[in-house]
Amino acid sequence: MLHLVETAHAQIAPNGSLHLVHAVEGLPSSASPNDWAVEVMGASETRLSEAPRSTETPASIHVRTGNPSQLIVAIAKEMPPISP
Image (tube, rainbow, N blue to C red):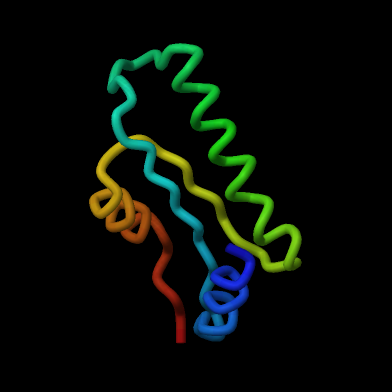
């Protein structure tokens, strides 16, 4: 994963930012997740944050439940536009 983070960082636009997204599928969609769901998401966030930290690459970490392709699009829409 370190190589992927370094490669992605090298391709960022001048005012761009790196966002690592992990979609957790198959968890209950209830308003209050159970202990297992909280543990899975916390462990995913911890593991995902290790790669950019070890390469000193600044990155935002996003761990959410849902369909991966839909989450990527939703997170991208949340980002402010890149100014020229």
